Length: 316
Image 1 (spheres, helix red, strand yellow):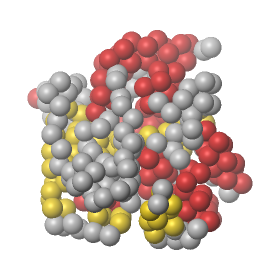
Image 2 (tube, rainbow, N blue to C red; image 1 turned 45 degrees about the vertical axis):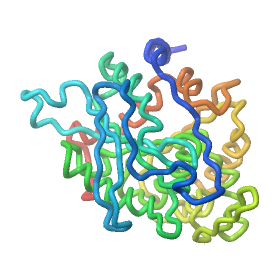
Image 3 (spheres, one colour; image 1 turned 30 degrees about the vertical axis):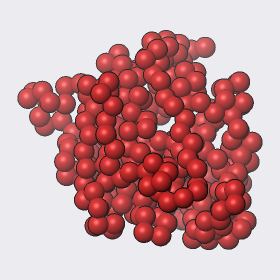
């Protein structure tokens, strides 16, 4: 093990003592409100002190949508008033969305920044709507995130307002959405880390023309709005967009085989990516990060370094 890996492992063990992340599983029966879904949710009282809750008005849905933002140490210091920060958008797991689901991740992020393991960044926790970040019926979760939340964050905080200053990351259902959104909107993000996404379900959607079977229910999405067909369209673009991709899944994860097959799909399409497959890790974000430590966040730093050091910055 090299020195960098040892540092990541040590930092991860310290930070993850305080990380407790629940895996939320939503049902599909009844309407969104009956399933406990809300577009705006309350912050737990014991939330990390550097987290703050906010809302924006969604023109796409004519309602308020909540988000949670983590601001790095020093953000409010007068001496740092001119500093711009990269942003990682985190898509929590679970079909029924909530902006407060993944916020315990702020604990290790804060410690990794303070220890110097990763660059300072803003972290935004996204509400994925009642149907796993899809636009579905009157719910426009994807549209609202891409067209409304990202511009709102750029207006409200000191961000690097181009793709070299944005990364996308998500777990489970959020991992599926990370792949879809990154391939569809590669002009907005420089890197993407889909973690433990259920890509076997995305493949089934591709084979069924957009139908997603869940129990006795069938949702019908746009035929090519899945991580398999979107990867194919991405791979056919010339030149292929410069998007850094990290796929991570534990070998004991229920989505392991689906990820293996999806990675073979990416290879066949000539899409470059990196992979992390910790042995024996199940479908558990806490345990996955317990092994990977800050290496996922450090992966995004490659893009952020170009933005921070005056490297090429596209207009988007």
